[in-house]
Every structure is written in C-alpha cells, then in structure tokens.
Length: 430
Image (cartoon, rainbow, N blue to C red):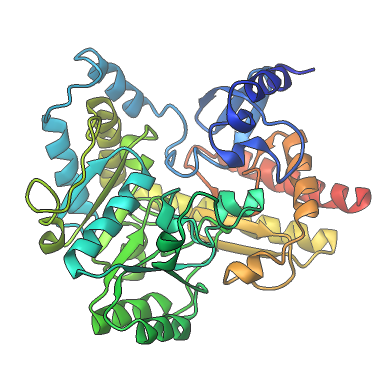
C-alpha cells in the first residue's frame, strides 16, 4: 500500500469521506487520491516521492507556477510581523487600490476569506440594494457552497452525483431560479414571469465548473442588457477567470461590465482569500458604511494580502505573462486535437486562453445538459492513463484545467505526447 493510500484510509476515519473538499476524493475517476507533499514551478510531488506535471494549479490561482519566488519572499517578510491582527493594515488599502485599478467594474472592494464568502455577500448586498429576494443562476455554474447556490450547482455536486444538497430549505430553493447557460430566451422568460422580484443574476462569464464552457457570441451582452432593462444587479463570479483570462479578468476580455464582481484565491497568491466589489453606490450599502451586514475577523489577513500583492503586481507589470499563457493554451489544445485524430476520436475540446477541458463526448458543449452527455467511465480511464504518465489532471470531467507560465515548451510537448498515448491506450483497454 502506498503512503497516499495509507493516509487516505486513516483520513476516512477522521474526516468525512477522507477529504476536506469532495472532488478530491477521486470518486468520479476511481481509486484513491494522491496526497501532495510539495510543489514547485510546474511540478507536484506526492507523499511517495513521485513527480507530476501540474495542470490544476490549485484550481486556478497559480498562474506563475507554484512557490513563485516573489510571492514566497513576500510571505516570508510578512510573517515576521505576526500572522493576524484583526485590525486594519496598510496592505489592505494597497490591495484595494490595485484591484480597483486592474478590474474594470470595481470602484470599491471588500476583502473576505473565500470565494464562497464573496458570492454569499454579493447576493446579500444585491438584495439589499434592490429590495428584492430572488436570484437567477445558471445550471452547471458553481458559486461556492452557500445555500442559494446549491441548485443545479455543477462541479463537485455533479461529480458526487448530488445536484442539490439536503439541508437547503425549500424557501431558499424557491428564491433561486435557474436557466440553461447560453440561453438568453430562458432568462428573459424568468424575468418576465417574476417581474420586479429578481435582485441579481450571477454567472461565471466563462464557466469552469461543468468543465470549461464559453459564452456564445452576444450572450454576456444580452444578459447585461436584460439586467439594465429589469433593474437587476449583474454579478460576475470571476473566482476562476479573474486575473487569468486578462489582467482585468473575463470582463476585460469580453468588454462587458458587471455591477458586482467576486474574486477568489488568486488575490492571495493561492492563500485562502476572496473579495467582492463593484459599483460604489452598491458597495456603500455594506456595513459599516450602510445597513447590509457582512464581517470577518480574518478578512484582509496581512499574510494573504502580502502574497496577493506580490502576485497581482507581477501580473499588472508583466503583460507578457498573458501572451505566454495564450501560446501555451493554443499549443496544448492543438496538440490534444491532433492526438484525438490519431486515436480516431471526435471528442470535444473547449478552450480559452489558459483554460480548457477535453470532454468525452462528440457533441458540442455549451451548457449543463450537453456537459452531462460525457462518457464518465471513459474519462476515468483517461485520467488514470495520464496520471501513470506523470500528468496530474482535475479528477473530474466537470472541471476546467488551468495552465501556468511555468510550463516550458519541452513540458508542453511531454503533455501532448502523454495525451496521445493515453487516448490510444484507453481505447485498447476499453
């Protein structure tokens, strides 16, 4: 038994399911999870001493690779002054100034401790601003584990086969309306049928939580127009896309300005952190400036702020990072498509910048229903074939992969070769 297997057996006696987040359990792909000991640059190292090329990057934030030296130095310097104060610091102000400079929609921002906190708070302030109760979200979009969002939630919920969670009250579920992603007509119908009742529409501008799914041309602008028409607050969940698809996130890349934006762990350099921000007139409702209450003892933690400042300053000052990410993404996905052709397969690849997913289906994937058409057992075979070749993928069909600039041309070629070999081998073993 490997060290990882031993740790997992022990963990199952101490932690629900043996993991602290469901997708880590490998249930969607079979086998036992790999326990990670360390990471550097493009590599992960497990408790058994094996090395893997990393294509998850802590679910997005490690754009510059693991243990990027300026971020690591910022943390080392910060911890000399203690770990937490529960009081204001200069770094919080500097972080707010940097975020408002980089993200087009953000005039004011509030730091929190996770992406889930950010989305929960954003919905609350949208309800306070509009005086309305209902929320529209999209099937397959995941916005954290807040009660309002665990309706057709995508990602972990899909992986575990639990699209809706027990413990969510009927009253909460009744206030959450769902529409298919990329379906403007369905959104318009919901708004018409719930006139003056919808406070907010929240969506991932590029979905990462049913695999990588792109907005079709005109979809984001159509949502923006519907929100303007009906007096609804538009919230972009950029926990995954923020600072990754462009310096200013997906909203910069697509030229669509939401009213509120939620951000996640990248603004802590990968440490536990989140934020929400947007129009000043909406954000001024947040306590203590206004009546909408939200608080957090560890919000704006000085260690996380130090790491995030080092990360965001580097991204802001080095636009070549984004050029390189685009190159890596194109080279990899072109290589994967060539591998599919050699294996005689017509599977779908969705790709934008440094995000992509290989879907085990021949049909296009533009929404939740189409994503669910994938051959899940086939993905499990593919996952383990790649793992055997030293490539660490997300252990779920319903997750985007995230690339980093730490990937060299040689490593990209190695990943492409592993993909081709894996596709051919799993077809033989099927």
